[in-house]
Length: 563
Image (cartoon, rainbow, N blue to C red; front, side, top):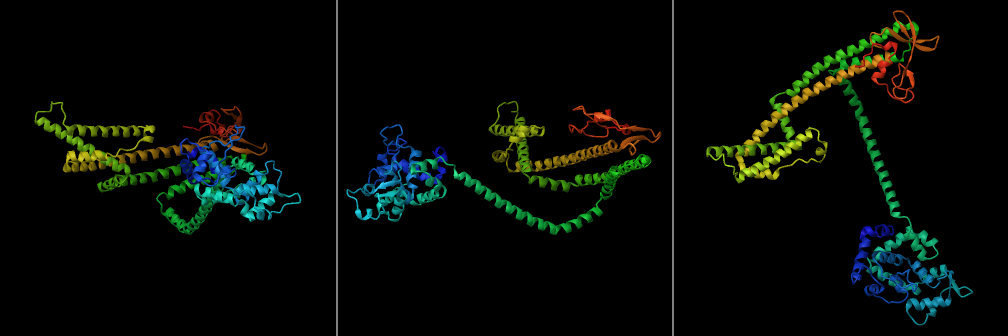
């Protein structure tokens, strides 16, 4: 029920709890369980005097009825109709009564109509002159809507029955507290519609068709909460920054100490010297008179590169020996590593599954041996114990096949895989095998898994070392290729220098002093011409491939080998 009415009623501050209270009353009134109530059922439940005024509280006009008779209301219609009258303030009750007697919206009613209101609301035959005389009528014996509302709000006697009846319905339809809250909400959020509309019916229609202020409020609350969280995070960040600054000096000092004593300090220093010299060489612009100087500086870069590679190789030989020694370790180290692994979720599940498998496999072997001795091994009939044991073993092997599939790269299975715990199966196996046999299986499991973990660890270590060696080898090749493709190969006889008279870069052969101008290359993607020394097309931004570099290599780079 709630989803079908939520959008219409929540904007009116009729929350789920409020609406549920109204729904309980609606169900109680719906005596015939038809899903709708009529005016008779309303008065039967709420009671009170029934007249043309009180009927308006439960009067839903049938627009298709020319006689404008009341029609039955479903739950949503009843709720909205209740809101229409029970959310009215005292002033709006006076306005509603005035508008009953001013259908053409003239804005004034006669004294005789006020007298009629007195009789109409109080259900009396004669008007009460004492109260009527208190109204301030003009020279035409009329009173405006504003004056009538103001007078009734101050001297409430004329509309008191309407106030009492509204209070009575409020009390029985959820409680006065709910409706006072809703009245205040209407005054706060929908007052503009009440003031700008010609009458209460128009105001009610405008409220129903208005934007849901709850959405606005929720957004504002969310923004406020976000701002609060941001401020909190900023405060925490500032506090963390202060704490960090307090530690920075100590950390920096410790870092310097570690760097000065680190085993790889000579290797790092060699690479720093190489990178520094490379940057200096790139910034330097050599002229045609400095061809040999450029050659010496360029060859020195290759010497620094070779030196850094040599020192790195020496360092990693020792580092790998230490890692192998640490990983291979002693039996005690592997036992400790195994115990740490057992604390993990995977370790616990694997150990339990393996022990279960070993225990049941041993049980089947034992039963088979007993049958052989009793000369019953040819019998195809299996005992209940065998059936149970073989069923559990089959489940374990299914689980192991899944694990193998995941290791082989089945990502879909890995995504939805949940390890089976075998708790019930372990309990059954413990009873089948006995305490001693199951204990032996657990001991065998520990020994087997410890050995497997040792082998896996050592194998993985050697594989990791090999992978790192290959990465370093490729990195050294890349560094030399970058050096050659930027400044020229090791054995090139050409130097790329500045021809100041002609204001351009040229290639000079150091043996013949022949001068050749830089030629262009062609982009393999957009066919634009680019300088041979450039590594990226200036038009489309595409990087040049190794084949393109080989095809259009400059004279100074003829000896570059990409591979």
